[in-house]
Length: 143
Image (cartoon, rainbow, N blue to C red; front, side, top):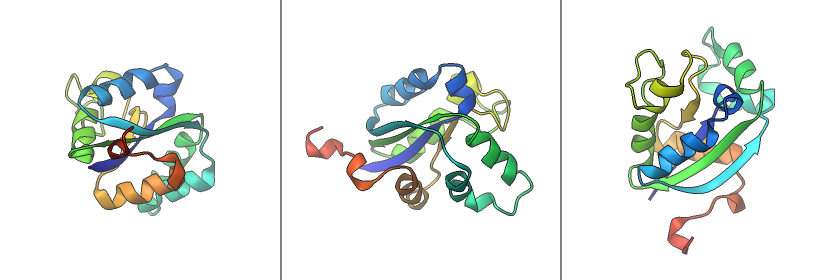
C-alpha cells in the first residue's frame, strides 16, 4: 500500500473546499490515514519547496503556502500517488481537465488548491515534514 501527502492550499481553505477535496480523494478508493490543520511557517515552507529553491517563483511559493492555514493529509491505497495526481489534474488549472480538482477549483497556477507528492521518495520525505510517526496510521492495522 502506497502513501502520499496531500496539502489543501490556502486558496481552497479560504473557499471552504477542504472537505470537498478530501471526499473526492476518498471516493476514488483512497483512505485517509493522517489529517491535521496547521499554519506552515516560512522555515517549513522552504523545506517543503526546497526542490524549487533556485527558481524565480520560490519566494512566491513560500509566501503563499505560509499565508494561511492548510489541511495536510496522508492518503493510503494502491497506486495512491498516481491516483492523487490524476485526480488533481494539471498544475495549471487552465490546462487541467474539467472534473479534476484543479480543473474545478484552481484559480491559477499559483492558487491551484492542492498539492500531492510526485513520487514514492518525495512522499516519504514530505510525510515526515508534516507528520510524526505516531500521527500516521495504516489501513492494514485494522483502522
